Image (cartoon, rainbow, N blue to C red; front, side):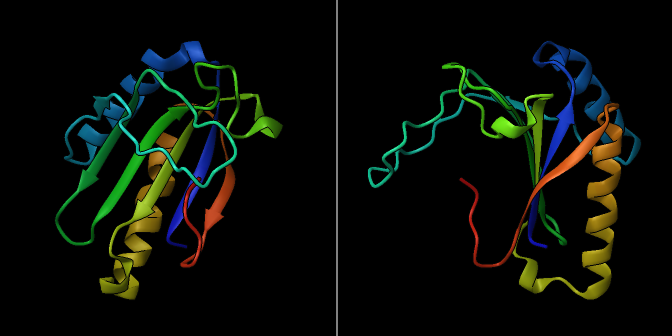
Length: 140
């Protein structure tokens, strides 16, 4: 697994509690709190579907080895389109990614899997795996 998308079973209005829980988890393992950002993605002109619009999202990353990244996005965008329409009970999604995974040892991979599982638990809400990304698959 290079990346995984979790659905966080909550309401979109649970944002403050969700971020507070994630920041508490990060502090408990010695990391900084999440960053709140405005999406600035580049539009894919080959896509026939309209690009999702979000007012903001949260993310955090580790530049030191083993590198990782995660972000929190609402499941439903500003135009009321769901990224995972079969999982509307998930108000938010948690995307986790092993950055430069080819440089990781087996113990690094296991430590990241444990960290990601603990992070999902640290949201304070029930989570479900929505999608697992392989090496030849990119996030949409």
